[in-house]
Structures are given as structure tokens and as C-alpha cells.
Length: 379
Image (cartoon, rainbow, N blue to C red; front, side):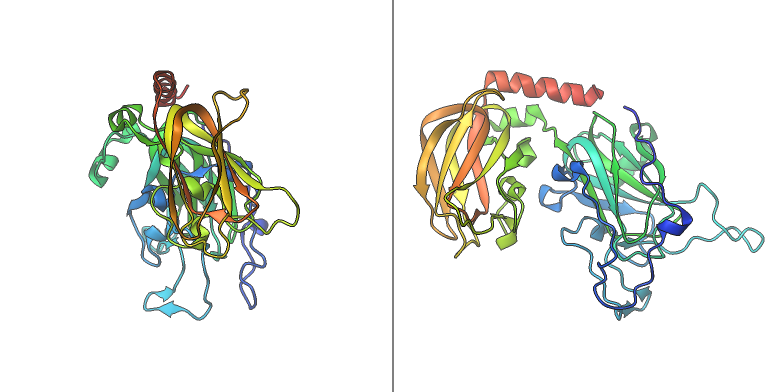
């Protein structure tokens, strides 16, 4: 593993955002289009992620770091501790005495994050939205891989388990600070440090899920497309209203934008999503859920699969009518062996979830075990 070099250097002039005066608070927000942000957010609350501890959260709660919605700002919202901020914010650090009023170089605040899905981290976004003059000067990130469900005390007592994946790096205020991570190891927990203090609105941890092959083997039959089990979206025709990645999130959709919805087509084509499965699998049953999509659900759906990157697509579920706001259970007439799947919807619209129920083949189980072993070693 090689720590990522400092990214996005922030000079004293460029780090601070202008004070908010009026109008849209996001008008001068500095976003990011980093390619890694298209990967799964391993710290998504829907996968089971959580901020399990922090040394200080005087002004704003640590749990807000993983909120799914963009941070909001109300210029008039004050509480008994001061300005109410939508993020994690610590108090101002001070030095030892009047002769030494500034914090030392080693002083910092920290928060411990349990990833929702263990995996290889390709990049992080430290979002300081609305923290214009109260963001940290620098951040650093450490990662660790623990078995089971360790307590906060167990996470903290094993210092040798933690490895720096982002050294101390300057950040900008009111900005999505995107940092690529150069590490091929499988991690389960993060510790984000802010030097010396300040506020962070959101944390996103993008990468590739590396599931536990022993656990999947015990399950036998499971959803081989679900992101929690190692599935991923590789491409899609459209994600105008909501992300195609939502279709393979665990659990039920909670509202319309918790699924996938395309813009309205005005041609004779159709929309589609392509998936990579956890590994080579035998698929026996399909679920297509259009929950909360009532006047905008797809009209029909078909499913094709292929076994290997270079193989041709083979239709295994012919074009089937969908009902709005309904769970459809669709058994396959013949089990299908595949590494990839493609869902076509006609002509456009959306769906909430896709489930592909099956099991790993012997070849798939061996490949997944080999991948997990390499990721554990950082190879």
C-alpha cells in the first residue's frame, strides 16, 4: 500500500470561501467530478455504515457526516451553542496558556467510521459545504481491517491495525475536496482526523465492495447482484433523475428517488443498466420492484446475461409487463450461469430494485476467495 500524495493544495487565499451574504448558498460551492465518485460509497448508511465515535462534537453531531442528502444551510438557525450546522463540527482548540495560545502541531480531532461494506477504497470526498471559515486546515485518514463487530474500545486499543491512506492534506472551505486513494487493501473502518479542529459536512468513501466469501458460502442462495454482496453497476443508458446504482442497494426503497428513473424518451430506443455480479453465479429467480414509481414506472422489462467480459448477451427473461408500485417475482425457466447481467426497460421510466437470486458456482466461489485473499494482503 502506498499512501496517496497530498491532493488539491489549498493556499491561504484559495482555501477560504467568501462569507455568505444572501441567495443560493451553493452558488459559489466548489464541487468535484472525480471519476471515482461513480463507484459505490462504502460508507453509505443504507449499507449499514455508521460514525461510531468522535472525540468532540460540540457544535454539530458526528452522525451527520454520512447523511445521504446534501448539507443544508439556514443563515438564521442558531441554538444555545451557536450557529446550527449540518455536519460534524468541533469546538475551537486552544494552546496550553497565554504564552502559548495556539494548539500544537499534533493536536487534532477525530471520528471513527464503520464502513457499511468492506472493500477497496479508490477515493474519498471530504465535503466542507457551508463551512466557509470554520473548516479544518488539514485532514488525514487512516484505515483498518477488523473481523466481526469490534467495540469502540477494541478499535482504539490496537494502534498497529491502523494505516495511513491519506496523509495530512490541506482542504478548502465550502468545497467537495476529492482525494484519490492508492491502496489495494480491503478495509472495514476509517478514522478521519481534522487538524487542528473545525467542521466537515459530509464524508463519502468510494470504492469496490469485497465481500466475505465464507459468509456468502454459508448463505448458499443470495442476491448475486446486490452491492453488499459484491455486485456493481458497470454502465447505464440514463440516470437523469436518480442513480442506477440504487437498484442494487439492500433493503426496500423508501421513496421515489431511492430507485432509478430516466428522463422521458422521445425516440424509439429503450433504457438499460448493465451489472457485474459478485462472481460467476447461477441465477434462478428475478425480482423487479417498482415501489413508489406510480406514473413513471417502466412499462416492460427484459433480462439478459453473459458469462465473461467478452461473451455475447443471452436473453433469459423475455419482455415482461410491469405494474406500477409493485413487487414482481419472476422465476427463470432454466437457471442461467453468468458473470454479468443487463436489464432493459421499455421504453423508459424507472424501477426501485432488481434482485437476482442464486448462488456462486464453484468457479465463482474460487475466484471470489482469491480476490478477497489478494485484497486482504493488499496485492
